[in-house]
Image (cartoon, rainbow, N blue to C red; front, side):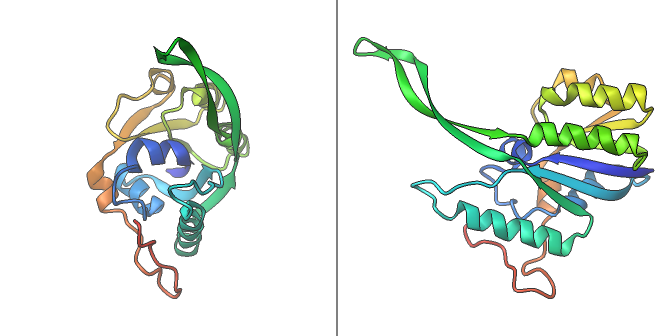
Length: 207
């Protein structure tokens, strides 16, 4: 079965990778492990945004660049698409009022565009008849309508892969022909080589 995989990068990171030592992730090997053997994975589209350094960790952008370069050098099936990070000040309610104050000004960080980009590619590729099965790696319920359209109007099979062991979104699951989880064992056995063969690209020391 000709299969395209659509990966919500930030959902994967925060749902399955954060706090682990498995960030040097080979997406193709992982998908081959999670999916059944009849899936012929033609392409993996990875949707993310450029991160910025923080006062406590200025090297985040460099680590991201190294990883994306390694992934694309080692796996030609992988394509990367970028949204963007939006930071702005907002006033939010305090969970516990402090000294008569009920609100505080905070900096809100949001990743914008990746969910829309993923949904558009999922639908457009189905119209182009590029795949028999589209697999969505995310737990973002905003993708439910795109999954529904592809399944009901284009007659494609839809798979849902949920990062981590939490409950999958019911809005997504009801539009999927099958559902899987990404578990720690799958991450452990789906790591890129270090260094990437034929290059000097190495896993960041902090990982």
